[in-house]
Length: 488
Image (cartoon, rainbow, N blue to C red):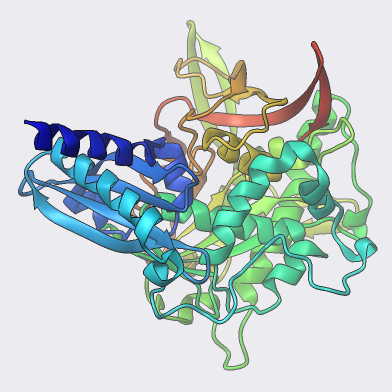
């Protein structure tokens, strides 16, 4: 009896070296770890870490055999959490949990963690998105990168980027430099897309071109990223400043389709030295090809809301070449699609209907999000538990109103809190090409909002009440007061 009690007491002491962590935190720390087949063969039960998060672990139930396993993850030489030890065929979740916590204790007391984590396939240099190369001048850094680096309230975004960076192996050796200097928005969009695709359970690689090759049991496709940037010359450099509903309608029907059109047709027509288009290149040639676009042409800040929050309507106008008109008939909403004429702004004119352009049949779909910004990275960091104690984060915007007669979204205001279960894919919009040679299946982006043009009508599919647009306020607490530190 005395020996058994001594063993039990010793185990309890060793269990003090580990603690449960939330699914949101584990998802961030292990963002690149899971294989695409994992959700089909196992169910994750609980998540654990040592008190300093030098190692983390997961308890898994086998969906076929209904037995349990555990996996211990340790950072490799590039800083990525990867599986370093595991055991399986365990009879219960409790038994697996006891074994994992014992393994965590042994790892932090007995093992050389650097040696335990070494996988043997690490690159010579990890990708550190926040490390500024020696000799870089402060005025060379992008204003948003300086904001990210120096603002206390941006700690959650910094924590997220710290975990994403080591997983990136871009073929472009200038990725980090461009992220820190002249192409911050474009590179942040690519980081957002990578995280979103990983969350959707794809194995994601980065060939020379297109940007992402995605594979899972659900299928295979490639993605090329692009953005709307500010115009510095030509007619579009004279940016409208719509103040009335009529001016906004004109802005969305003519100016913005040209901005989206410039970015999308640039990718549509671009060829490499061998004369190959994006859909003809890389390991995904012949599979569905997707263009992913975000609007950064008018950034937010200083009290202004960025253009990405209100320009989505112009995208589907341009893609499908139709606008939607609506009216109430006997109390019910009636909707019809009306063919657009060409888009005209001052002396510039472009053809409407991107999906009808020559060559566009090779584009399976266009993906859009108005959330590929620092605010999203902050919210995901808060969700994972990285908010500073003296800061609060509030989100204000509009959600989809499920009422079939609704013509505007439902306003909301909420505090962003730990383990809020926000997803990278929450704001994703997928526009399917009705003329695609190789269509993208709906299940490829299951759970997101998706749009199709069927029998002359715009048809949308959504899960739940997704956010249509929003902005995030960061509040710094000063005594009993709250001071707005920044708004995005």
